[in-house]
Length: 249
Image (cartoon, rainbow, N blue to C red; front, top):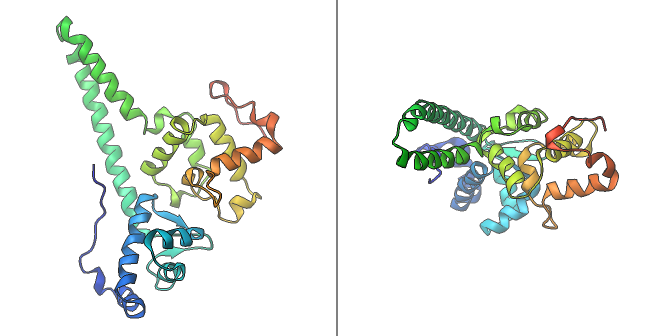
């Protein structure tokens, strides 16, 4: 399915956009909309330390990226990240619509279950296989099927949470990167605890950070995991999803 976001067709007349255009020309307007696209792709928030990467990807200057983000009140930002309040609001609305559609789909499956059992014997096997496939596809991105997802979300500020992108990230951490839910929770709790530099400096504010790569090309979850293996190897080995219980560290 093609992803898209709504675009006010008179946005170019906004005073902030006009000032941007006066300062940097049409290139800056195109850069603005590219940044908006990137924010939607990344769940509504991006770190400032990626200005250089963004500039390289868009074939522009890092200083221009910084000025567009910070100089015209077109984006919200703090010391480490920038985001669009309207993008976060629309992503949240999209997630709510998606969740409502998922609930309706589950209701339809439940109501059709009795009809499936009434099929003749030769069709029953196919009906069951189709239903199982649909269910497997839907549970991948639903929090009820993840044991610790809710607890992990609680470790972060709610304003940065986006259900769809976070569940997608969490699914990939477990399915593609092969990290157990227990290990993910252990890593998040350690690096998001009060007093930890990653939390206090604002450099670890969303779950999406774990699948991003540092300057050496290493995913942050791999880097965090390596740090914990060096400093808390015995403690980390105790985490098993089947009998997981958070212990002090």
